[in-house]
Image 1 (cartoon, rainbow, N blue to C red):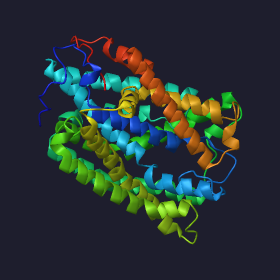
Image 2 (cartoon, rainbow, N blue to C red; image 1 turned 90 degrees about the vertical axis):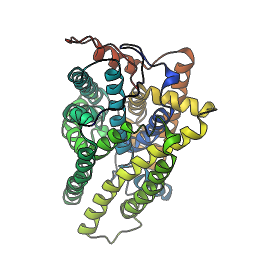
Image 3 (cartoon, rainbow, N blue to C red; image 1 turned 135 degrees about the horizontal axis):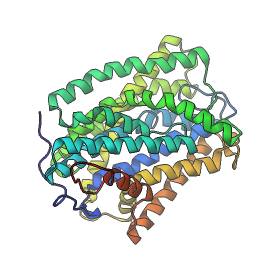
Image 4 (tube, rainbow, N blue to C red; image 1 turned 120 degrees about the vertical axis):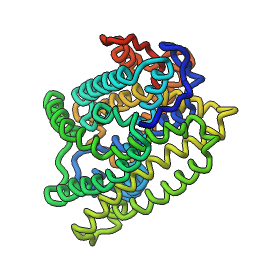
Length: 404
């Protein structure tokens, strides 16, 4: 079994890592990732129109079609693998801190799984109250099943990650066939009754969460591999590799996403069922490269600004440090803005308007996170997850390090 990185990120067992000691690249990546998530989720709250393969309005104005094409190309199926890679990276960091402080692997594995179960619980509450497309439970389920991969050999990680791409490609064809055969079903976000919406959100979430977990196995494992080499902790040592991943990943994601972007923007209308299914699968698979590229870009930016981070960098990092809180706040804002039983903008706006509100919502969370940083507050959701994870009953006294 390959060893975890031995360089400790914390002091003695139970000593929390101070915020300045955190990985700037990881925090920047999480802060930027939340913009992609906001853009990917906002259009899911729109209703009252036919939609394409990625849920964008097929009857929108030209500006709506341009926005849809750009988001299919650069956002959809790109944010999720980026989050998965960062999640795998963070699990290794958490495990390393515990092991460096003297904990044994069985106790660390129990800690990772306990945290995963609480993430699933957070995801259930998120879906129950706010959004059917929750991803917290997805990552919790993935970590619960694959926690042991944190100790797997590099060769095992890379082989499983590579082979799983083939599995993912096959899985990705299923929703494309279903959309062609049955059309896009109405989403729970269009339900007028808040009581009925609860049941529909949970029903969709229960099926969607496990499917999404199958989609992100590869970037999750590659995130573990990257964390062992401290690619984002020490980006200066890995500039060449990060630059290659960023360049190649963006090129692959654009090439692979272009056919579906043309279809969903209605610039390509004479497609056949076979070409559409293939375009959907290729778009999904090449999104892995895009997610990894975005994380690598964050590493390069972090290295460039590390000596003198400005206000923007500091605010983005603060958002990344409070990513769980900011993610949940996005859903609160979207329900307030878009739902039929609140302001009802989901029935009046197009994709461009929804994306504009998504950017505004993200910027608001960045400003809130920066204000929390200035007064020394951690995110409330992060604090709750820490408390639940580290105060559960256990046989070995694992104390609470910082969670990135």
